[in-house]
Each structure stands twice: as C-alpha cells, then as structure tokens.
Amino acid sequence: MPEGHTIHRLARDCAERFAGRDLAVSSPQGKFADGAALLDGSVLTGTDAHGKHLFLGFGPLGWVHIHLGLYGTFRFGASPRETGTGAGHPRGAGSQDASPEDALSDGEPARVPPPPVGQVRLRLATRPGKTPGAPPETLYWADLRGPTRCELLTEPEKEAVSERLGPDPLRVASDPDAAWARISRSRTSVAALLMDQKVVAGVGNVYRAEVLFRHGIDPYRAGRDLDRSEWEALWADLVALMHEGVRNNRIDTVRDEHTPEAMGRPPRVDDHGGEVYVYRRAQQPCHLCGSEVRTAELAGRNLFWCPSCQQS
DNA sequence: GGCGGATGACCAG
DNA sequence: TGGTCCTCCGCCC
Image 1 (cartoon, rainbow, N blue to C red):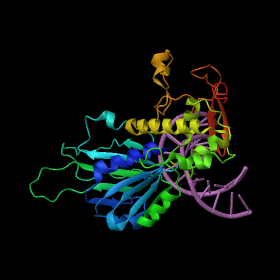
Image 2 (image 1 turned 90 degrees about the horizontal axis):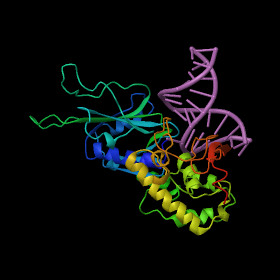
Image 3 (image 1 turned 135 degrees about the horizontal axis):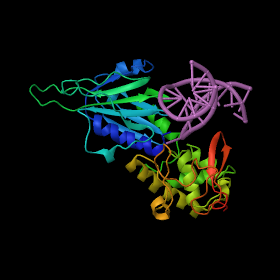
C-alpha cells in the first residue's frame, strides 16, 4: 500500500484538480451511495492528509475520510487527456493515471467520464462550466477503489481521527518528541513501534525496513534501548525520504553512491519501481556487504533486514 | 477457474 | 494472536 507519501500526494493531486470546483460525486459501486448523494454538486473546499488518512473537505457538509488499506487506489483521468507532464504522475501504488478511452470517435473530447470499471467506491468529476460560449474546459475525474474506509465525517470527528495518530513526518507541525516519549519508554521492538500509527503516522512496511537499514539499526532492538540522537536521525531521515516520496510518487531509499549505476549492479525489476536496500529482497545479497537479506514475520507483517549491516 | 499475496487496520478473546 | 474486511492481479492448474 500506499504509505504516507502516497496519501499526501493524493491530497495534493485532488486539490489541484478539484478544489474550488463543483463536483459530480457518485458511488458507482453503491457502498458510499448515501454520502455521495449528499455531496453531489457541492464544492471541494480543501484536502488534508495525516499519516495514511486522506480527507476531502466539502465545507459545511464535512469531510470524506478515506483510508486505502492494503490495496486501495485512486486513479485520475482527464479529457482531453493530460499531456506533457509525464514526470508529474508516474506509476505508483495508490495513485495511477487511468488509461481510458477518453475521446469520442470523432475526435471531440468526451464530456463525461468513461463508465466505471470494477468496484468504484467513489467517483469525483468536474462538471462543465456554465458560461455560455466559453471554451470547453478540461474534464477531470478520479476513481477510488478498494479503500478500507470511505465515510463522511464532521469536523470534530476528523479531528478525533488525527488526535489518535502520532506525529507525521510529512506534516509541518509534527513534533518528533511526542514519538520519542513513547519509543524511549517501550520494550517493544523499534520495528514494531515504527509501524504503530499512534507512535509515528504514515510509516509503512517499506519505509520501516529501509530507514532501519539506512541507520544500521537492528529491527528487534527495544525502543527504550534507542538513543535520543538515533531517534532524531531516524526522524530526520523519514522527513527527507517521505518528502522525496511525495515528489516522485514512489519510494526510493538508496543513496546516490549505492545506486545501480554507481555500483554497476542491475537495477531492480519488480513492480514497485523504486530502488531499495532490503524491502522484499529476502535471500538476495545486501547491496553493501553481500550478506543474505533476511525476512521474518513480525506482528503479522513481513520484516526485512540485513543481519550484518544492522547489528547495533 | 481458483489460490494466495499485498506498502493496513480493526476486532474479539 | 487469529480472523476478517477491502480489491486486484499474477500464478498455477
């Protein structure tokens, strides 16, 4: 899934396309039909993201609270098709451009989004402007599929969701000391703590594995055995890595000196796109020391680490 | 055509 | 800790 960087990127992408505009809101699949009916025709007033939670604001009507879970996705489309900004919307989990038939056979841009494919929980689409004689506007739409949550919340309910979350490396006002207060008292492993959204919000299995590798930290070390300076370095790294994740819409964690080009090794060829050190590289050689990357289940999730580089 | 896995989180016990 | 839910896709038969 979608870790925090995907969600913040979606908040931005939705705002760019939809904020300030009347929207057609629907739930082709039907599971959000009541909410969609209430919102249909209203204006998106803003977007917000906290950890892996996405919020779409509709003024006094409240906020749509979306959580993508393991495999939820948002797909964007436009008519005429968006062009020239290929780097702006690369493929990435949770956020992909659609590739629908978005033009009519006579070459005229479609005036309505294509029929939904599969289980579309929520569809947002811009509505054509009403100015007579104005040139046709670009039509934008977005389809949400497979979220673990898609519900309409009041402002206080939205705040309550946020209050349950730890500091988010991607939010300006986040205070890493709040996380340190939990970590430094905990006998739980740092690997488990990093995945606990009440401790740190937005870190998922990929960033967890990678940031611990980058700092040479044994994932099984207890939180309370971490030094404050180690935590501060981990936090600063998460801030940098996750911001880059938002920018590129994918997770890259390999330092410049360790890239395939720099080291003369073949690039990664799986479906995740980004270059990583250990995530899903079990039994392959560590890029730095050649040891076999290990994997183990921890709290129901797959953990990956290099037993030789991560001993401290 | 069926099975299992996936960047997540909730719940009961 | 185990079961469950959300949906899609690759793999195996």
